[in-house]
Amino acid sequence: MKKILFGAVLLFFGLEISSAKDNVYSSFVNVEGGTFQMGSSDSNAKSDEKVHTVFVKSFSISKYEVTRSLYKKITKKSPGYFTCGGTCCDDPSLCPVENVTFQEVLEFCNALSKKEGLQSAYIKKEGENWEWDRKANGYRLPTEAEWEFAARGGNSSQGHVYSGSGKLGDVAWYLGNSDGFPHQVAKKEANELGLYDMTGNVWEFVWDIYGEYDDSIKENPSGPEKGRNRVLRGGGFNDVGSLQRVSARWQLRQSGYCGNYAGFRLARNVD
Image (cartoon, rainbow, N blue to C red; front, side):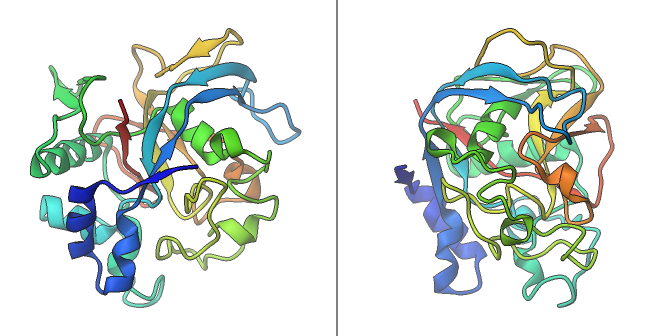
């Protein structure tokens, strides 16, 4: 799968990392569009994981969860619950940011887009409502369908239960190995697309409002029009194996709520 380095992003992200070897944290992966079976029918599947056919067009997604360092650089805030201090990771600045609300995530995406001279993807509406400008070239959250397609390995998927492996400990920080803390990004193996921590470490916000799937064929779905909760994906450092599956879903109130288990990664349009 072709990997794209956005020049401006490479320069900017490079400033966030403590040494030259960490410039790799600027990488985005171009995910070729395709059709897949979203959801699961295995014995651990929940009722909200109904299998259905989905097509997603090509998009780009970050190889890494957004780090505390990058979040602080853009927002001048450091909301992480875990102070780390060398306990949860070798370099706390490279742990994924967490303890952020959905609104704060969208504000970060817009702020980073503005800094890079790109179009903001999100428009603030009345109250806590936001609108997504789907034609904007700036940074955004992946949709739930984009996220699952990428977590499965896109068109290179090998059908693993977890993102990149059938062995959870190879690719994830979870209840069985995390010691109750998030860890520095990219310390586990990547999946078929070269994406890290799509399973475990912190749950990741996606754009979609939470809702039950139906079994109709979908093209570039982005969730229900209305609802209180946003979807979280990927499992977390303090969760059991069944919640680490690529199809597993969680939810969090979009209005003012955050969790020390929830972070995010960036996506962009490619056309």
